[in-house]
Image 1 (cartoon, rainbow, N blue to C red):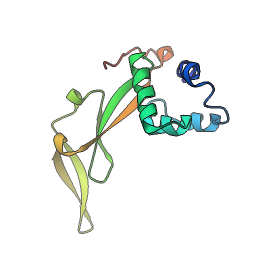
Image 2: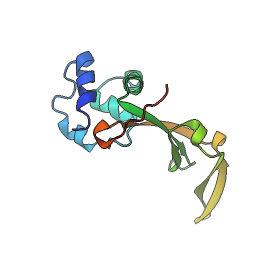
Image 3: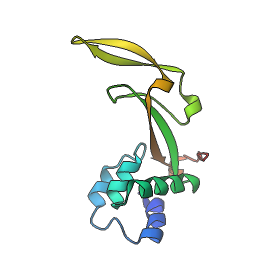
Image 4: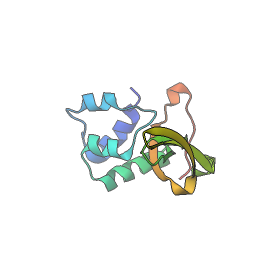
Amino acid sequence: MLFEKFLRTISEHLGDPLSGREDELTRLNPDKFYAENVRSLLDVSAGAAQQICETAVRQGLFRRGIELLCPDGSVAKTADTEAQLPPTVSCWVERDGDLEEQHFNKTDLRRLTFYRLIDTDRGDTDRATA
């Protein structure tokens, strides 16, 4: 299972936080999840979940990514780092019942950090830089 190494690390610090939550764990997408997913799964505060995720990044268990969100909350662009995001992105915006494509500067859009589980069995050996 992809989460075994991560879960061992968590268990060392928190005991067995996933007892009875195996169904929730199997619903997580290891290629894209958020600190909020970890918060909910482990029943910890948002700050603790963020700290757990960032610790996992430093330990080489997770890779951090970033996404730009359109005004409606849909994902406009995803990248591994801020520097890899293009200066502008397109979003579809509803105006008078019609969808129009609009271009936005990346500095004007909300960002959201997500995480990916690094699976060395798949050959995923990338390490994020903190």
